[in-house]
Length: 166
Image 1 (cartoon, rainbow, N blue to C red):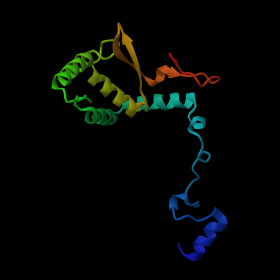
Image 2 (cartoon, one colour):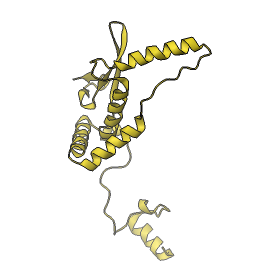
Image 3 (cartoon, rainbow, N blue to C red):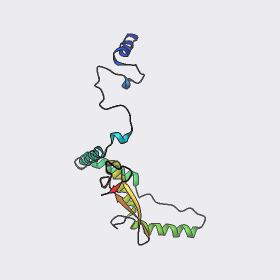
Image 4 (cartoon, one colour):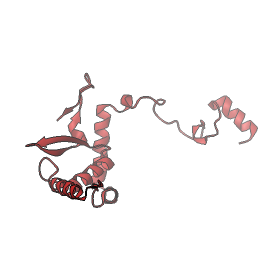
């Protein structure tokens, strides 16, 4: 831009920035929405629900997106995130790893999924829905995890301090 163009841009379209995308231009439409603000003002429960609905629809109806989401989860999780005990006591390390492996086979509270599958499902939910909730719980004194999908979490408009599981 030469000097006259920059001056005209300042006069007619506001200040001139070195970031071309920040400059107003008659060649570009205005970006809808207000200036930056707190996300909670933009992402209302209704908007959040609609974004999840549309995202799930796209993944369900596009083989290309299904492949991307599945590959992201597969390459992120692989064989699963597993601990490696590293104390100086080799016997304790083996015992701890054996206990963990037994627990990991039935880590999820319904008994349907092992820990690796839970990790895979959580990774896919992060890609599609943007979040997944994992509740640490127990059953008969044995630690378990419960996977809670995003559509099952919500709050009322009046009280946003406490979430409820639907």
